[in-house]
Structure formats: structure tokens, C-alpha cells
Image (cartoon, rainbow, N blue to C red; front, top):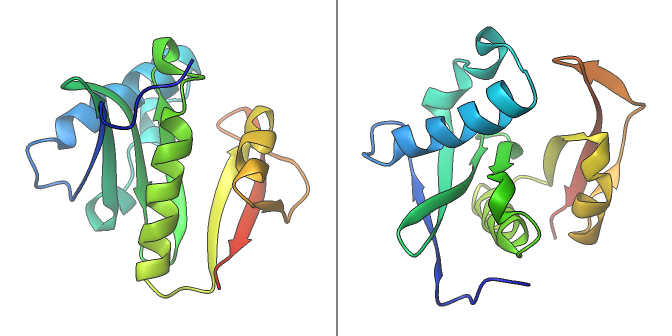
Length: 146
């Protein structure tokens, strides 16, 4: 099942925007509560410099991501009840478009190993050996931007 594109709205903003707390709530629920990432690791100085994206369906906040100036996509999270409906794909495409606007050569991300196929479907390729980050196995991935 996928969400109709007319129902999905993706907002782009910085941490001064009124929607920033919505991103924080999603990240808290997914990373801190579901995946047991420590609070100290989840919140970092990069948030203030990043461009943030919030996906909403019918006015409800359901997913978020951020893009750093160097083309690094991160903190991508979809609430459990909204997974598998195309929201993550739409959000990732927005993040890739942001990287293209930044005129970087590559969009880069650190993917949890269970999500490798998700990112590969968007054209990302694994470019590192697996490693632990926040006690979760990850790999670095990149997408060449033409």
C-alpha cells in the first residue's frame, strides 16, 4: 500500500522553524525509543547547520530527514506505522534533490545495514565495510550526482 502523492507533503526548513519540534519527536520515537540510541548521540551540533525535511500525511507528521551542506543525508526516520507506504522513498528523493542544489558531487549517508536495499533502490552504492555506530551496524553509501 502506498500513500497518494496528493496526501503527502514534505516541508523543508531549519531548526528555527515551528516544525522543528515535530522532527525531534519522530527522531526520539524511532532512534531513542525504538532503536535505543543514546540521547547524547542523537542530538548533535549538525542539526543547527542542516536543512531538515518533515513528511506529513493529512496534517500528521510521519517521517523526517536532514541534509548537511556537504551532501550528507542523515537522521532519516519513518514512524513504524507509516513504513512500507512510499513515504521514505519520497523523503529520500527530496533529500537527494537538496544535495543536487548544493552542487556536491555525491550524496552520502550512513545506512543501517537492514536498510541497504532501500538505499540501493535509489541508486546508492555501499562504499565502506560494515561498522558499529550507536551499537547498530552501518555502512557508508554514496550516490554520484550528475
